[in-house]
Length: 298
Image (cartoon, rainbow, N blue to C red; front, side, top):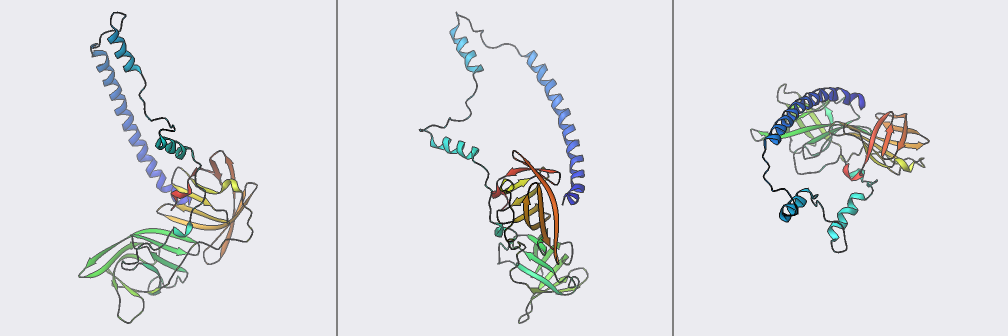
């Protein structure tokens, strides 16, 4: 996924650099203006002296640090709870079954489908999941590609617009024939028809491997500066997620700085990766990830 992300990052970094340059110029201008105002401002307060105790008290109040938070005490349980939450270790477990699933069944096309006839029907291992809330997934084995979709109306008919990598890519009228199983998508530009068959439940999460070697130090969730998230669970399941783009589930074993990981498209594919740990930083295949709470994934 790193190669896939790189092109997007180059453009983002260029824009960020230009924005930072502009902010720097504005900051310099603001500092110069503040300096002028500071030197021109007349002294308004009386100098603190032994003959002017009021001036001394005012000066002390002006220079005293402001209290920002109440100290946690027995009389202040709220502050104590907040301090405990800030120092609590990050959660290392989450429920992967909550990811990439149908959220709202009561919307058109919500569910998992395959293309039975029409362009894309040759991809018999491809599944199309619409979550009912505007996110679609093209699922292949333990991999998934993510795309937004939008529902609308045209002449009292439901219309879907979705740009997936393969198969369902465009704007379609949704038609259901009474007594006929499945759903038709009719391309609003070409009038080409896709016949969809309902695929029932589909999960990209693989079965846990038998007796995997687990390095407990890497368990939990990790995220890099570009939003890519890794999650290792104690049962030998590993998720690599690029938010809003794609994800891959693996089975894995980890020991002595080496991870053996397997994902599936039409058949299992096994890879190896290196890793190392230093404090709350995981280096995976040469890229650094910081520990986050596993609760942030779902």
